Length: 413
Image (cartoon, rainbow, N blue to C red; front, side):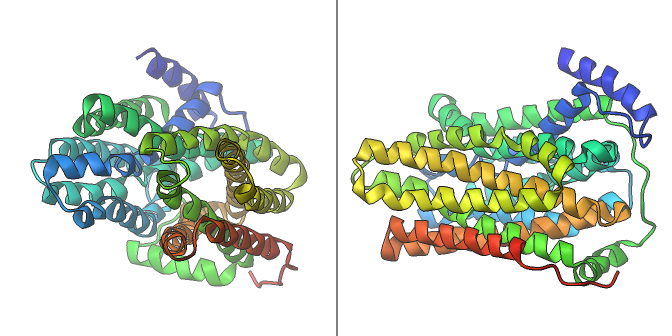
């Protein structure tokens, strides 16, 4: 509770200065980062626990496999259908409602007596975990323009750490306490974040009076009107193809020869990715100083080079291959995160009154790429092996770099 009191004290002062260009307090930045990372982690807890859940419930592998699928589907629909509401209503209220519903969904998932309810709750978890996407435009609104990249970078570090560390935490907790305990612990952590947000976040003035239907229709208008938004969504989507192809096939690859490693070892590679994610605030500061365009190119280039280094894996001993994969994961996670921070900084500057909708369009593009990467990565691994997965990831990163290097077309505003 001391964390909540500290955040409340610092954020309360910041709220009174909202919009005047004053720097955000350290407590409020910590709250924003945690409020992004803890909810988004709920999307990935089930992945390393699928085998345990299947054994516990007696469900077939094909049925258990729908758990992460429904969670991701719920998240994608939540971004598309719920995130735009942040421009129409007080974001603080939306954040609190979603956090409460997410905590309930996780708790019911942990107490679910059968697979049917667990599948329904998985979809609900994905839908309400989009609270993370309400935090990012909130941070961009609170931050003074000169620090927007750095603040968004800090929040996105929290979000990516939640993604990468969730698999590690879930694997350990499920092994020691069982999968139900993981869901219950997750529910408690989200509830704690909700209390901290209630105490620490200021209220946000709505920036649009459009009806819900008009808000959704405006997404297509924003897409057509702003070439910068289209380029950002396309480039980030391409980077996400390789990112998702790697992480969705890593455990299967490590399980086979010559490694024969379990899911806990695969989850541990998330620590390498998390180390790379810690560089995101630096990317935000570079974006503030030199512009987000430069950072998008650096991020895409670093991602392509990091994936390409894994072409050397067949000529290395198994232990050396593991070190190579870990180093590559650190590099491409940093590159993807750099690009995402820069893309968000770029699109948030397009129209301050439409930040929630702009963020929704960007992340829809990103999650389309994630879905394509997961599906194509599994197919490629099964048919042609890990080396071709590496080729797919490298090619998608190079395509993203080409999008960022292409001359900008003139777009009427």
